[in-house]
Image (cartoon, rainbow, N blue to C red):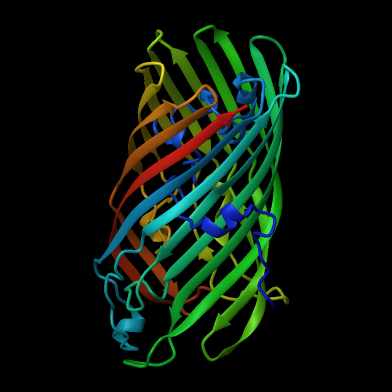
Length: 426
């Protein structure tokens, strides 16, 4: 089967530049704007500061100037993931004689994440918007001799979303919005396979697939009083029916299918202006990661192609707190922190290529008002990720009846993000 060009409907900037690296729970990309990154995304659903509100809460479009509003951003993510072996072993090592292997080097890397937003006001009460963003991603790769190579050596998951939306201002206090989402997903998994005992070189097993699916999102913005507003946003889960192929050393290539479900999310946020200089933002955001239990590739006859990639994720939450300070007419300063809970239920289900753990964000940023129509946002965040352990089993067949190795070790991960965003209104 020829691989389809899965990004054919996406603007060239996204298609050419996007390379995934998740920095929120699971493999979710919550870093959707430089203005948001500057406050660790705290209170994003109530911020309504620029056109990026089209994605985080489209009801916020009614707070933008009554004209054309554009925002374009690129975030550079530098993620480091290192593995330390802590007793990996089993039949593959004790009987077959396969070496334990090494740390695999740095499984992370540097990735660029571009995004685009547009909002337009045809009337004082109506707004139309469009967001083109990557929403979920993971890009993790280890060396050929990696200890966990029989469970996972390389993973690439990319989901890019087109999100038109409409908002309506019911009155001076309340605005509502609805959007539809068309998303394209592309996955690529690679791991080592056993071709013989002892020093016989390993083979390679690879699964690739892609597909499109639909979802929706909702937004509400309520002005409690002149200095205080609350925002609520909801984004539905999206279920992809992926079509692709399985390639394996010394075996014919075969067509496969698999279902992948990304979680729904809900966020309740607050924006409060303390005085003419200071404003505070806060939010509680929930992600329904329990919708992703496994990725199970199957052949056309319904039989398993390989053992399922089990995640067994659980629902998670995130809390954020941030502040902005209006230094003068040209400059606004930002600060923020957030705690992000991971969805992995236990060490047994922590995979080699999504070794997720609880994390804390520390962020700062600024807005430079260049002209009445144009501004630049800058945001930086360092993410502290809790050390995490794995006890992942490797099975000898798709039915998962025999454990041939248990990979035991510790992951150490950290990340930095730097984002720049151009805003223009006319």
